[in-house]
Length: 194
Image (cartoon, rainbow, N blue to C red; front, side, top):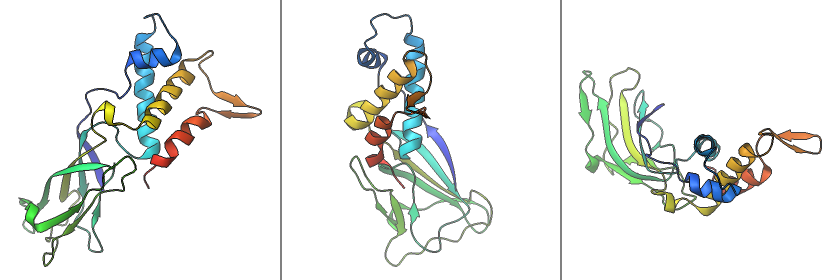
């Protein structure tokens, strides 16, 4: 399986003004730095919880269809399956009609991964034996910034404040050094997708 980003989110779920308010910064001197820290905090968060925060489009490319169960997609919640294409036995690209498969697209802040299975009485089609013979294009993410759970937004702001703070270095707890405050992981852990 290989994942390719088709369309990225056009913004971050936390604005520079929101981060500055959280950090109690009243000047514009470091706005560019803060914007970069927000982007880094969003990247860390998405990596930690294995989800996309804002709506994005991704392509999941596979060698073939699964012979032992449904296709399980990354980055819940998945809001739509845009298309499923595959290379048939002759190597020609085909689109698998939506009537041929069923989708399970859980919703909510802690949604499980989406699944795709053949409809009753239908089997996955045979594919040409090459890498990336099957492509599932899908939309994922919570939606707009206002749809992202408050705990995730709080974690992003805490990360920005920590990385912006005095010394701009790791957090020391006794003799343990941590780059990420425990508060952040505590806020994010309930949203982690496995």
